[in-house]
Length: 112
Length: 114
Image (cartoon, rainbow over the protein chains, first blue to last red):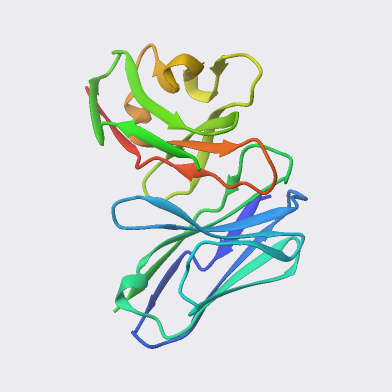
């Protein structure tokens, strides 16, 4: 009964590869997000989608491409991975009119 | 624009002592304010939230926070620390309009010693 689930939990890959992270929420929320947590634990918004439409893109390199096939899913595809992409990526969801966001367990991406 | 400042990257307390984690915010419009907790290798869990109702907000695990507009603060407290409270705590702000997103502080690691 996980509210926001993302897979995989861990991802180790080589520089230059392409990888995807999947996220699903069963809360019936309108809005989904991707956040990046760096090695110093700082959390920064990357993207926000509302009802499958991109709302916010916070100056993220275009190697990162989110895709929302429906309002319950938001996937993140990353091309040509770089060492600096190593981080924990969190998916989250909320109601547009609501307050708090609910977070997934995170995907720890390590680029070697 | 909105921002959050958490004073102290680490706070150490003894078990049973008062916990006080500080958060100051900046927002041009009335904010929503939150405290999240992150245990090692886990996601963020909501502790409590302020959404313009009561200024003293009670959350889970015995935590509470008070919204003080005059001081632009939203400090988190707990009367008596438990070992299980050791974690990273994040204060976050979200403006009360449209498609806003959470802006987080840099986090405070709470260390609890026996």
